[in-house]
Length: 342
Ligand code: CP3
Image 1 (cartoon, helix red, strand yellow):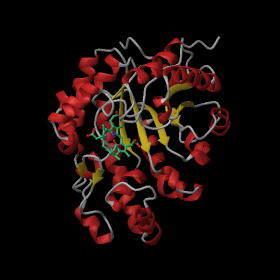
Image 2: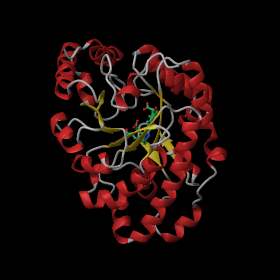
Image 3: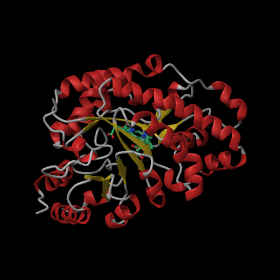
Image 4: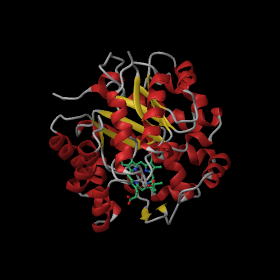
């Protein structure tokens, strides 16, 4: 049914003619056609109106030629559905005016009926599936419970998420109760995404790298494992825990099909840690897309060589930056598509 299923076959560990490629945060951010929609509609309007979300999701497939689409939405629709107000402030990022600070704040939260609160994401997935008409697979996603807790407690972006960490270290029972509520919501949400047509699910743990190995296990991986367990027999799964390379072996043991890595770890070392039975995804430094095109081409080839053939999905090591010229993004994608390992 799919005309291009390179991503799915690579995640299953099958041999493919070439390495598949997509870019984290490819929907939105740097594309001029996205900017035009951004000028007309608010962030959550773009998420909530299926025809807008679908248009934004398909733009990079048509304009940059990636091998997969990722649904346009945000990880913070989950805390929103659980009852917290989330604002997206232009130039600043997310802002949650009434963050969770103590046990009594949990009373303000619900584990929602996902069809009622997040049905618009399922509608967007169904419409996108229809519009893609089998061109490429569609990726659904959610934030890892730890990363969602970071925003729910800190109330905004942070380099350290010190308040979120202090919350977990001083009120561990409350923290685990919250993490479990987020996990239960996320499992229902992702199952709904699969029913609506998502071919692959990626879990974004953007702040996993802030935790040492033992805390990563206790506060993050324990909950990611529940999500992967609930999904892995139904859908292909990718865990991307930025900066948490020390736990690649433990992440591989969850049974996920793919692991995202950032540019700070060598592909050969990541492979050694993760073992041979899992696909690695990454790991081009997103800032390098600002280099001249010949430099991008050269460095992408070096990356592909370092990963070797098979069990690799070419991607960035984190989201694409808003100021990347479209022809540079295209050079990244084209270099992967034209590369041969022989
Ligand atoms: O990958 C895609 O293109 C699909 C859409 C997507 C968005 N957010 C849209 C968005 C995805 C997968 C995300 C995930 C997300 N959101 C993460 C995890 C990935 C990562 O980059 O670490 C995180 C931490 C968030 C939270 C969030 N949303 C932040 C910190 C911000 C502000 C700054 C920014 O651009 O990262 C957002 C806003 C947001 N989400 C934008 C987009 C396109 C930019 C705002 C806009 O265009 O109006």
